[in-house]
Image (cartoon, rainbow over all chains, first blue to last red):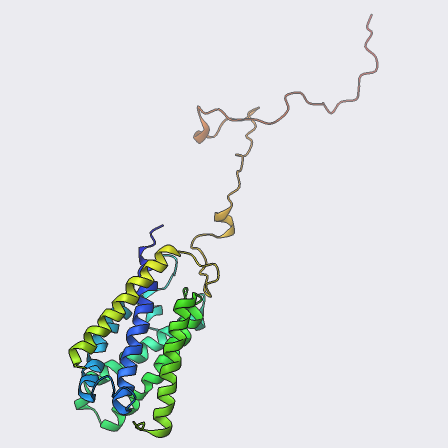
Length: 176
Length: 95
């Protein structure tokens, strides 16, 4: 049995997770001062815009590899419509839902100038929900999530982002 | 830190994770403790354990072979000596 697609799917899934962590971290840093010691807002904004071009190809490769892999048995429609698979409906469906949300957030960011600012902000804040769904997806479906190194990095990234997000909601721009 | 350094660092970090996880996945192809274990395709009970079947016995006495069986030997498991449905013989002497 050819295992290439299976290996690509797992590797790109983990790499996409890290890239999305970087994207959200740089986005949160724009509104807080926690990373001011690393770079100014202008550089952080540039990174936030650029990071989409890291996770998009990885996310697409993750989905395409899973669809092409015979073991995973994911139909093309399952990658777009959540909770359709004949096994692991919740675990896989959360990933699909997260992907759909990130796609909406991405597209609305590209057409931001044509949108109402309040609506765009509301949609963009859904990225916190999308990340929470992504984390649950990786926790419930991730083949390598029980590996100590991978698990510790994933939990640390999620916890760090969670603390920053809650701080941002509660206190706004954090004091230096 | 300039923007290009942040971008380069992000790309390198992601590539490092990509290569590292690919190496890990290649050396741990199957994880028995993985939360999802998709069913293997095409393993219905009938397909998984096919049973050998013998062709139906074709009695030759008084019948002709079907066209598909012409010229091919047909195994017969029927015993060649049988008991007849007649009363047992009790008197064998004749004058």
